[in-house]
Image (tube, rainbow, N blue to C red; front, side, top):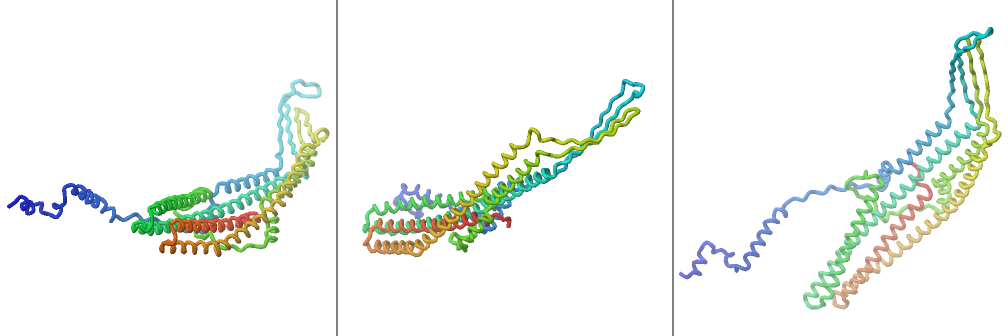
Length: 440
């Protein structure tokens, strides 16, 4: 029996034994890799927690509960309220006690201890007290209006950031759809290149477009995370660990008339209310400066006791405005009142112009949305379908398909931006009208 026959009947007579020696190491490596990856394939992946769906109103409430800037504004109101109590406080009476000794007795006086007791009370000018209390009350009102202004701007900022978050989600979805479409196009290109119907350049061009699409998708996903971090920062980090917005970028909001918005803004805009409170406060400061020329009078009652004599003394003291007639504080208050008046008139006129500008922005965004969604978007989708069909039949090249796909992506991006601009303009209108200033 030949050696080859023994080899076939020996213990190595297995189908693997017929593989050449140079391929055996590669086979062992494949088997080892399969053994290593087998447990991973069957291992159960940890389930990700479902995100908590939050509406925009719930998001606003969370931010209002935890925002540090709003809390600081509330503490400012508490300080101003305490200032009202301070301004209305009544001056405390003053008690004086003097003691000594009469050491030079005469025929009419006896030697001994001397004791003096006195009580004084300052009676404030009622006009000065009333003006000071009014100044503190207007300061409290100003702090309340500043708090409303902070709340109004904060709610507008939260809503704007929320729609920016929705915009980033839509951009990521559009980037993912574009990437999927490019991958399908590449598969067709690869088939045509493999059969020789197209050159390798088309495959290289498809690969380059896919790389760019992957980068756009990754950038869009990172921008989603960035928008979420900005929202969580406004809420002082108190948002749930995993959350998502239960809203749509293309939500339709009822738009009131421009004249109604102007009237509402003039009456309810918190910035105008702050300036009006400042004006009233300056008026009260003028009255306070005029009344402070005669701050009040001081009543004194004292008693001096000697060994043989008791003296009861009653006195009144009043400050005479001979040199200081409080002209400086009065002039400062008048100048501050005029400055506040100029700011109030200028801000009121500027507010009307801002409302008209935002109203025009809403109209522009609505026109763009209608033109893009009803015209350009449909035309771009139809052009892409025609280019794909022509490419399948060999009538067009891959560059035509990629150009059509690029046009569709650009139109879709413009549509998303127009929808975001519409929401941003509507939020700006509500902010200018002071619709977010109320705690409710």
